[in-house]
Image 1: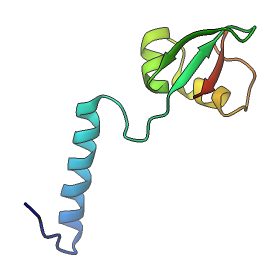
Image 2: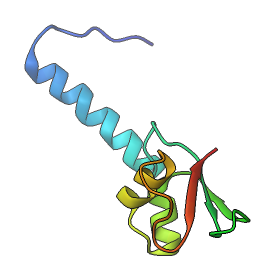
Image 3: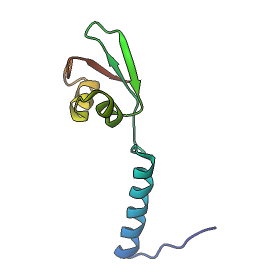
Length: 84
């Protein structure tokens, strides 16, 4: 099974919408990165499939988790965060 893509904006929009629908069906972005939640002392508490999943489970905002995991801050929400 194959498909032919015409070079017009309408078809690009359909393909983009389908990619987004597939990502939402998985409930996690296809660009996800696993992230670890640690105590301030560095002991691992839990590992999550993505920062969005960590937010769902902990209530800590994912944008803050991302900043901390990138090293832009030491802790966020009372925890250290690290990409695995």
